[in-house]
Image: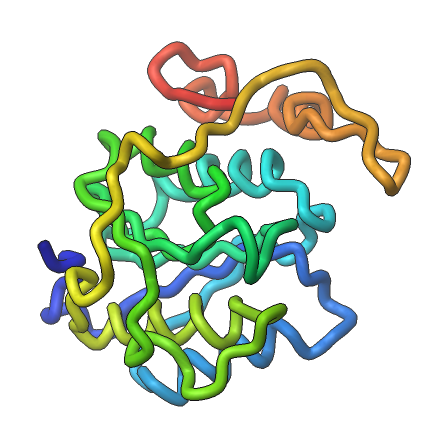
Length: 211
C-alpha cells in the first residue's frame, strides 16, 4: 500500500517536531535535507523545544497538533533516546497523514486518534535515506529524506511492512523524575494552558485518546 499523498497538492506539507532546541544547526540541517530532495514542499514547525528524549511529551504535542493538519500532511518526529539502536525508523499511514519517526511510541497517540494505522513500514531501504547515514542523526539522514520522498510520491511500500499491533504504546502513570530535575507527565506540564483550550482539544475530552 502506498502512502496516500495527493499529487494534486500544489505544496505538500511536512511538519517537524523534535527535541533539538534552537541553539544548534540540527533543525536547519533537517530542513535543507528535505528541500534538497523536494523543493516544492512547505515545512512547518510544531515544536523543537520538547525536553530531551521526553517521548511522552512529544507524543502529547503531536496528538494535539495533528487534528488540525491538512489532509496528506507528513509529520516528522525526532524524539528518541534510542536513536540508531533499539527504535527503528518507521512510516505510519493513517486516514489523513503519513507519520515518520522512531518506533518508540511517539507516533502512536496521533495515529490512534486518526482512526488507527492503516499500514506501518520500517524504513530500511537505502534509497529512502541520504547516501551517508549517521548513527546519531537519523532526523537528517533517514526521517527527513524519507518524508521528502513521500512528498514526491514515493511509495511507503518500498520499505518493509510491520505489524501495527507491534507498535509501542505510551503508558500513563505517575510523573517520573528526570535527569533535568523536571517531572515528565505532560498533563501536569500543560494543565495550566489547557484550561483555556476549547473542550474538543482538552486532554480530558472523552472523544479523543490522550496520554
